[in-house]
Image 1 (cartoon, one colour):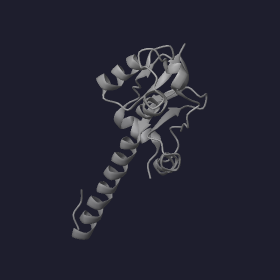
Image 2 (image 1 turned 60 degrees about the horizontal axis):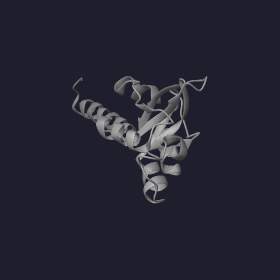
Image 3 (image 1 turned 90 degrees about the horizontal axis):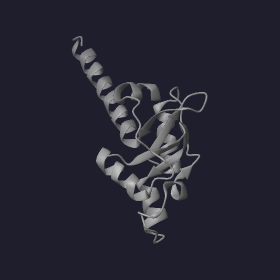
Length: 146
C-alpha cells in the first residue's frame, strides 16, 4: 500500500489557507473559489488548525452566528488530527473513518505543514492502485507484458 507522500507527489503540496482573524464569510469565499472543502489556518507561518464546511455548519449556522462577524479563530478546529508523509494510505483511511473527518493536514517531523489530503485523494489513490493491480494480473494471466 502507498504512503501519504505518494498522494502529495501526484497532487502537489499546495495548500489553501486562511488567517485566524479572517471572517467566516471571507473563508467561505475561498472555499468556493478554490472548490475545496477545507482550509488550513495559518498565522505568522504557524499552522494553528483547520476550517472546514463542517465547522461552518456546526459552529456558525446551527448556532445562529453571522458569517460576516464571526472570525475563523472562534470556530476553527484547533490541533486537528495530522499525518506524516510516511504514514500509509490505510492508516489515513482508518483515521478518517474512525474520527469521521474528511481532511488530514500533513506535517513533517518538526510539525510544519507540508500538505493537506482529503478523503477524495485517499479514495482516488486506492482506486488507481487497485486498477493497476488488476491490469498487471490480467497481463500475467494472458501472458502479455505491460
